[in-house]
Length: 148
Image (cartoon, rainbow, N blue to C red; front, top):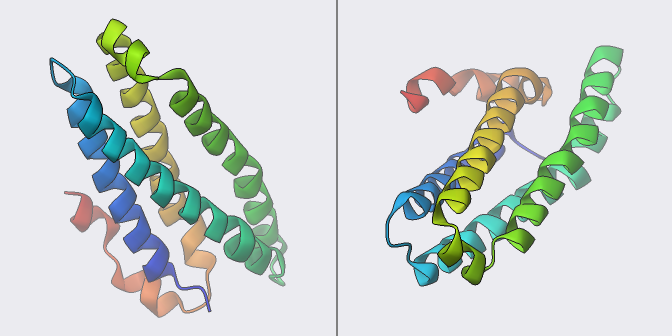
C-alpha cells in the first residue's frame, strides 16, 4: 500500500537535491561536472516520484467514494504533466555550453524550476496526501516544523 510518509520522504530528498542544484547554479564560475551530477540525481528522483504518483497515487484516489477526493486526484494528475514537461524542457535547454555562455540565465531558470517544485510539494502535502488512507501517518508529519 502506498503510504504518505514514503511520498513525503521522497519530497524531502527532492527538495534537498533541488537546493544543491540551485547552489551550483548560483556559484561562479559554474562547475559543469557538479551540475551534471546533481541534475542527474534530481532527474532520477523526480521522474521516479512522478511515476509513483501517476501509477499508484492518482488511481487509488480516483477510486475514492468521495467525489471531491476523486476530482482532486484528477486535477493534480492533469497538472503533473506541466511539471514533468517543464523539467524536461529545462534539461534539454540547459546544455553545458549554454550554462557556460549564460550562467545568469541558468541560475534564473534553475530558481524558477526549484520554486515550481517547492510549490508542487507544498500543495501535494497540504491538499492531496491527507486523502491517502492511514490519516494517522499523515498527522504525524509536521510539515511546517520540518521546513523551518
